[in-house]
Length: 213
Ligand code: ADP
Ligand code: MG
Image (cartoon, rainbow, N blue to C red; front, side):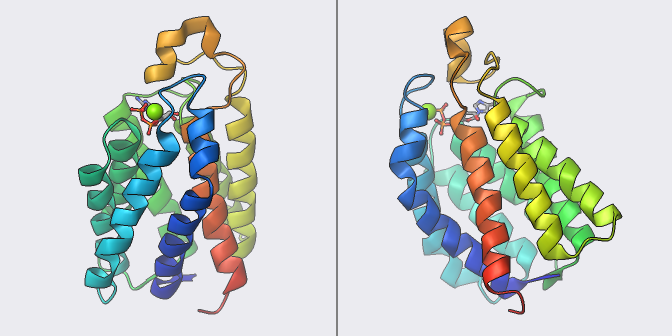
């Protein structure tokens, strides 16, 4: 079970985490991109923070949809619209909810990932955020089906995202700016897969730090 207050704490912790990792994400985007991923994400999540006070009394779906809109409207480049769609579609999957069961969590991540794939026209192993999000969803689904509690399920999800992120290193990029590099994209960790892992890790840590919120 995840409460609304935990969702709000996750978004706040994410904004802080992104600010801390702004340089790291931008450095990852430098050899295979245009060195702006950390800058884009930081701008986007600052915008999310400015919108939260207006919706924190609303349901979780509205909070996530509003956050997604903030990203879509404030961030240029691929990352903003992709993460914005992720949050908007994730929010639609949990419309009206004041708390999330483990099944809601699966539905949320599933809808968000489908949104990214739809907007990005992405396949697995294109060397994008999908390569972190997809294994994360599969691990979460399995953990929930196996009857794990929320904390444990989130840990298994985050471990899978971490592995998926690392697995992008040897991949050849087929989407986004990195794809312009062809073979030269091989050997670099994808910035978007990295931010996806960090977002899920932050969720897991938020729930762990405050299990009964
Ligand atoms: P931009 O590439 O426009 O500068 P960012 O640097 O913010 O945008 O984000 C780059 C990240 O976006 C990549 O590392 C990759 O994970 C992700 N990405 C790019 N294109 C796509 C796509 N078509 N589908 C899914 N993810 C993508
Ligand atoms: Mg970039």
